[in-house]
Image (tube, rainbow, N blue to C red; front, side, top):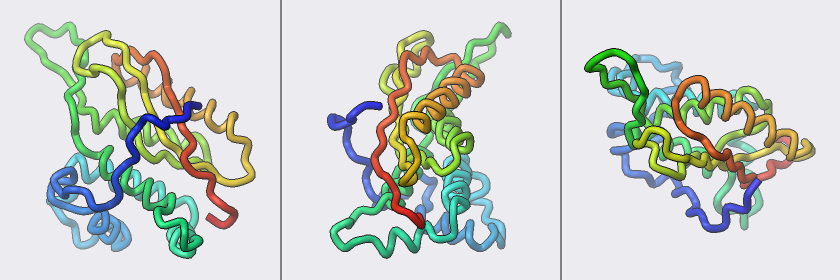
Length: 201
């Protein structure tokens, strides 16, 4: 676990809609809560929106009291953990850089977007009940095959759970997913605990 003091905080929800193909996190939340009905092709056809919807669905599924608990936080807690996680989801869904995938097929040019790989990292939270991934970024040139890359992840953990085992389990899950689905030369998975959520959230 690292201090992460030198890393910029994720921006709040006032994110340029171009990161989500013209949509906002609020719109995606409303769409999800409506059961994705009526279908919106501009959302369903957007890889960035689908990544964000998947993350939002996991976040909302943790407990029905998540948003209520954040809203009812102490007045001085003006930037609650749910808001930080939502901001991270919006930023991470952006396609970002293209990461090459080696292939033996002549003339083939395969690649995966940085946003899709961040989606893999975020989905690792499913293996650690109660833990929520906030922001994820890659430190290194992911566009260059074999270049060393550090994975930097912010998380929120529930109060009362031992933090080191949670972090180690997540680190192993992230490393395993990246090794299986990418050719990134991951030299480290650095996890920073940004929030410890109180009981009931």
